[in-house]
Image (cartoon, rainbow, N blue to C red; front, side):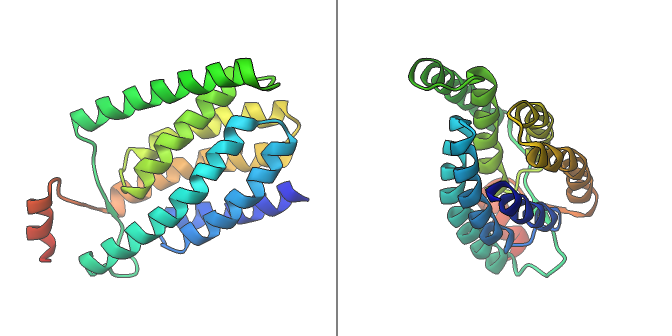
Length: 201
């Protein structure tokens, strides 16, 4: 039952993400709550911890997007995105590796997780992807494509068949999301001064 409810909330969430609707963060709060319970009972501990992290980031993302929408005077159908700098890419890769290794060690030695490496990789990618989403980075869709494909196999192995199906759909919608943001979105200028100049605030 918990998985079904989480499935419903997350399906709504991904549809809203495609169109960059701020209400997705509110839906994400409920999705995270139900997946925390689902993953706890399935012994997928790292992903359970990620959903606790995501719960917190949902409040942060909502506040950030509301503030940016006000400053940008964002229209209902306008999609904005940022692109990564080389320095940011390096920071994100290093952060991903550190989180992955830390989680792998903890899961291997302190829990009864049957898939410590896969669970650690999935969770570390989710953490980076969520941060990138709050900042509207276009490249976050690459992370979600990788996460979704990996999730299909992990959740199927843990007999979470509905969630495995959900992530199969995610794999398709992530690719669609990238194309929509890329083709219909408007690039936000890098740097505070250029950003202010372009959007006049």
